[in-house]
Length: 261
Image (cartoon, rainbow, N blue to C red; front, side, top):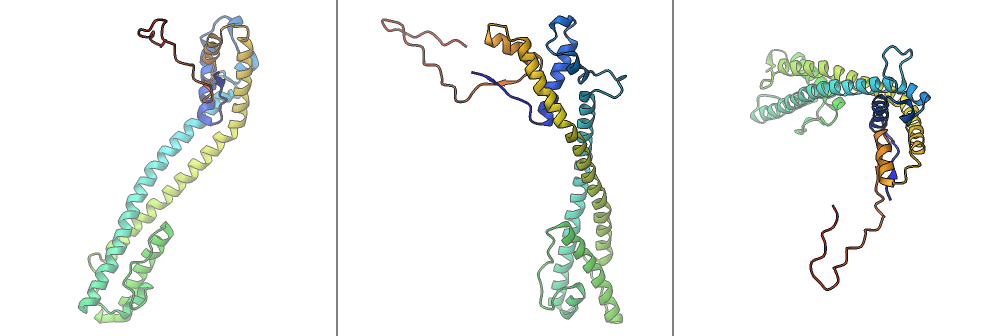
């Protein structure tokens, strides 16, 4: 037998409360309204209410979460593109440097200026944002230190140059901060919405009880559930409920009647 499913999240609570609000507005006869005045006061969309109703505040907070998530997505996409480009430049810088060592253009010993061992031909760890930030700083500092140490014998790196790496580092840094701020705003907006959730879930439970009690005298189970669903009550069939047996064939053989749809 179908059983009711109580809301347990922000989206399901909003769905229940909005349906109850809309059904109330569609029911002009007070005696036919399945929820009471106190419950309606928490659903009332009137913008003149001070303070606004619970549902009005919940919708506002949920909308602000959606806006924050959208802004976070844009900021994250922009940052990820800059992060990927910066990591590529670091990798290419050291690959080209090591090729230059093999050709005798650069000194193997000068790898130490970049925080690498003299024999190290691996790319620095670029797994995390902090790893990449440290690698960018070490690269640019290393190129400056090598220039100071080698003096007139200094051969600057190219493809990419330190100046090119500096440009992508600036892009990486400038986009990292907005991305982090967007993450913080999403967290803050989500926390504000979730602070209202316990009260909203309690209201949903009250509405379920009130609506089902209001329609308790309907002798037809399917009709009663349908009426309750209009007010936001949700039902689901029990997965353990046994399947009805197949319709037996008519006496004397022949084709059994088609099942009811």
